[in-house]
Length: 176
Image (cartoon, rainbow, N blue to C red):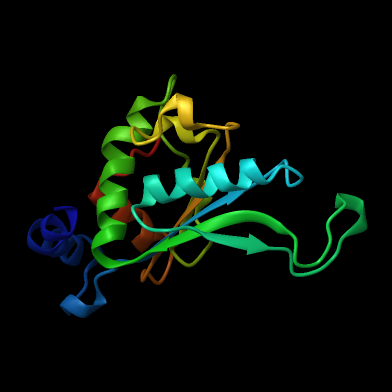
């Protein structure tokens, strides 16, 4: 739905706005990476619940991430499960972004828009949510503990200006 709208309506507008000559130069969504870190790594139910919730939110199975090296200050040993992640591409990425922009973000209490300073210099945008209960797929009864998540939107934009124009055209609510 959002991908079709992008092809038909948003792409020509972006070409004109950014002064691009070729359709292939128009920035697009490459992927959306969703990451959940687990605070209570001693309790396996917390990690299992986070993976189930992330799978419901994203629409595909989550991968459990493990520590690459041991860090004694964090009481972390190599190979220990510490979180879960999902990478969405193509149609699933656009569907997730549509849901995020139009349902989840406006449903957050006291939401006044996202900061435009969260770009990384290459047109990619990262935002953090404090709990997974803002998504309509997750019910309160199924949540073991409230988990936050990081959502990274990776684009094919060359710089932050193009990335901002793309996400603004797709409907990401920025503070202006």
